[in-house]
Image (cartoon, rainbow, N blue to C red; front, side):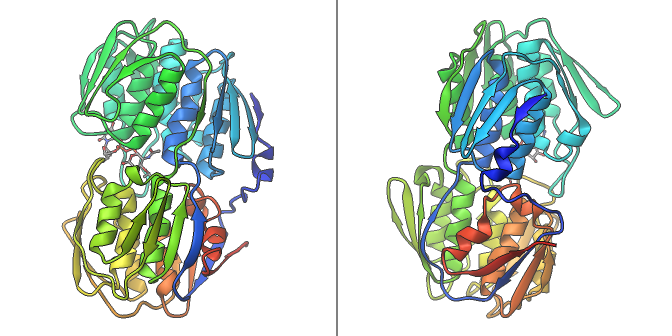
Amino acid sequence: MATDIGNFFKSGHQKSNPMDKIVVKEGGPLHGHVRVSGSKNAALPVLVSSLLVGGKTTFRNVPGLMDIHSILSLLGELGATVHRNGDIVTIDATTIDCVEAPYDLVRKMRASILVLGPLVARMGRAKVSMPGGCAIGDRPIDLHLKGLEAMGATISLEHGYVEASAHRLKGAHIIFDIVSVGATENLMMAATLAEGVTTLSNAAQEPEIIALADVLCAMGAQIKGAGTPEITITGVTELSPAEADIIPDRIEAGTFMVAAAMTGGDVVVDACEPKHMEATLKKLEEAGATLEVGIDSVRVIGPKTIKSVDIRTAPYPGFPTDMQAQFMAMLTRADGTSVIHETIFENRFIHVSELKRMGAEIGIKGKDVATVNGVKHLSGAPVMASDLRASASLILSGLVAEGETIVNRVYHLDRGYEHIETKLRGLGATIKRVKE
Ligand code: EPZ
């Protein structure tokens, strides 16, 4: 293993301790500028795409997150030489001397399954631990596996591992039963080195898909249609080193915009990509926020009173499931009743019970519909983070809840938000990390 990411933690990224807590106190409106980091969900597949290249790739604006540390550690385990200096990461995958992604790494970060396609495409085989479920759902990978099988891979599932092998993958027409970001990314990467043409129908259209396709094309791949429901990849025999900047994190940006709106503040979110956030921006305006949208920034002026809005999560360009918990936090104090329909994950209302402990009035119908009756006040309380975006919703609620809110298990937060307490403090929030 050749991984020099020791300075990863020296690069200012706080090492996350499972017992760390974040204490946030009720404060006034947030004000000022906050800068968005590179996108976690764009960086993960892009960093993995380096496995397809027998050479050195360089990525800039890579966020300092636990999930990024996990994927870089995994690439190192596979034999790549990984260097990180601040937000610049170089990965030399000339020598891949291992094709196994072990359970103890994959269980920490299920997006590790993304190494499956690239390893089979480049090395002819891969052995990856089944990622297993997580708090928000059982997160199957059947679409990933069916797609690889359609491309000629032999797949076996034994002892909790997926083993896949193919002398050379062959192009195929793959029609996804449901829209899957990860399956689209895995198979798009696999298809770049397959023999012939692969068509992905009912493909995910997220900005992260376009970003990955842009990097793969910079490496010499032939991809058309990324960002539409039909992507066509014509296989080539090898890819070459490339450099790329990671796109801004649209979910981190949206989280700060919700913070501004729900505190009645006036905040400019810088270094974001408004074009990636249209559904989120529309909902914020529907809830009463005033927006000034720039080229790479959005000014959010929160209303005196939040208006209730209905939300239905959907694949991009619909309203993002990753913004559902944050909007729910804001709507707990809206002037009426909001109905939130979570259509992507089967268990993404875990934050509801914690918000109710803070005085929110929320009812769940079936498993996927929450009715939020706005209340005048929330009260601060000790709460438990359960997954990444639920943790963010608890922090946001703490900003407006009377008294003090202590969010436990903030390692969930550190997976996807870089220095969130520092960034919020910079906007005037009374918030600190307490190391156990
Ligand atoms: C990506 O997860 C994101 N993660 C998630 O963000 C995001 O919520 C999700 O896409 C949806 O936008 C990363 O990009 C690293 P999916 P992914 O495959 O790819 C089902 C965050 O907070 N499905 O699009 O795992 C699946 O169970 C995270 O940053 C299958 O049934 O999501 C889900 O119900 C959370 N079979 C739906 O599809 C499969 O083979 C969408 O999942 C694959 C998925």
